[in-house]
Image 1 (cartoon, protein in one colour):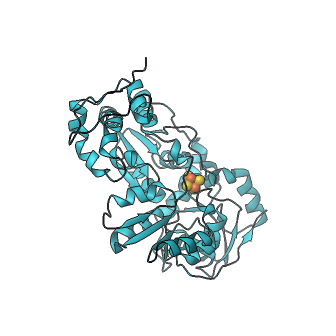
Image 2: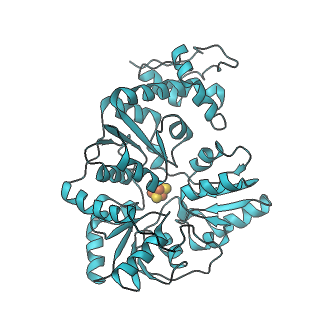
Image 3: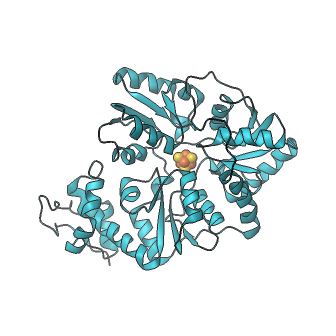
Length: 387
Ligand code: SF4
């Protein structure tokens, strides 16, 4: 039976303030699971409260803390770890995540992690990647709705048809795809290493063109940086495709001196108008290393919240787009996944083995001279789109 917390369990002031009354987000979710904010929870979570104070005001902390403490206890009990993508909300990213990062960083952690259970605080293709790399572990996704518009744009059958049309041309597949699509591919890439992988594949196969799927904009942005000809697919990320060069012009006019950072899933004219571009890990590094006075991250909304904790000197201008798939992942969903061991992600063994080959090729890639960062200000390049 759900019990709603509608009164402070800890006195207000430095120790935390009253909870809003009635059914309210994490407060009602915690209460429904019999979790309350008491002295033990307060002691266990006070340091975390400080970590996220920029995004979760102190008076809201008693609503979040019971689920956070509950999850951190369950992780110990069940020998579990949580892999938290950069697009998770700050409560998940900073307070329950054991490893944080972009797809590539999380894939590497999944391969190396010493735990019985992996909870993927991210979307389904990421959980599949963890299962591919760590087949002996139980991989859980907190919400089965956590898909991806890019991953949904292409199937294994599509890749087989593309290969028939372009025999002998290597297939480089962005990690934001299903295991089935990876299994049909020669090598995977991420936005951290796409140029490097494309140049390596062209050299390895002895060809001057490469199939880079499924993100049309990533393909165009890679094509602008390499002499390798690119064949691609009309997949789009519904978060990044919405940014425009006009957005950047308006931002610069409204916030003189702002540094504009863009993710390479953005359209090429956005990349051309930005000051710096790269994977989510590269964007985070740029901010912490360069400490710009004012910055805008043209990517998913939670990135600014998560990076700002490590860059208190920087003002974050926050027009951003939410990823509805990433936002299905909540503290309550993570708690339930752990408690009930629910929503296990599996991959058929024949697909897993072939997909692993493509991922392993990427993870063990020899070094090339290709830059890992994306250049901005480049003229648009053409790619051949398969229809
Ligand atoms: S941000 Fe884009 S690429 Fe990432 S999960 Fe959401 S829709 Fe997919």
